[in-house]
Length: 155
Image 1 (cartoon, rainbow, N blue to C red):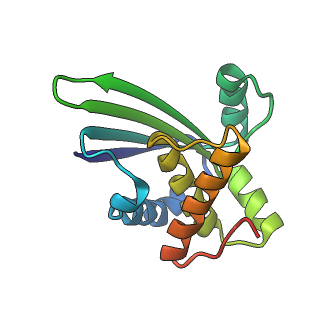
Image 2: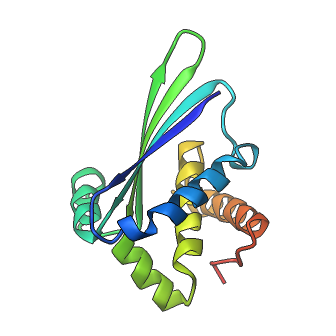
Image 3: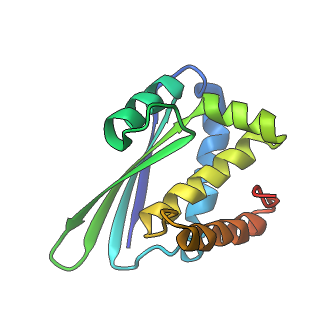
């Protein structure tokens, strides 16, 4: 299994945060086992750091929801001879993180870390399309966030 990633900056809200964002992503990827990475898959992530305008446009186009969101995750799975490749586009809006962080009185980077974990769990098969799956995914997120020293964001 290999994991590679790139960071794509789409707005002016992100460059000053780039160093810390990169540290967070590296920290998360050092804990692959906790995030249920498939040993028979290779992962290629694009973290697209953007704004509400872009996430609203993508949300409307691909999810039929006409509003911005904090994070969108798209996964393209390719079967290879002996394994799979998962190509993952994760789009994150700085504006929504800023808004949610103020509203919930949480740190911007803790919120960002949570969204990275949330997205990677989606990539690795977790979903919240019904109450049972929502609770499973939420509890997994809480456990991982606790490991990173972040309080339960669902309280």
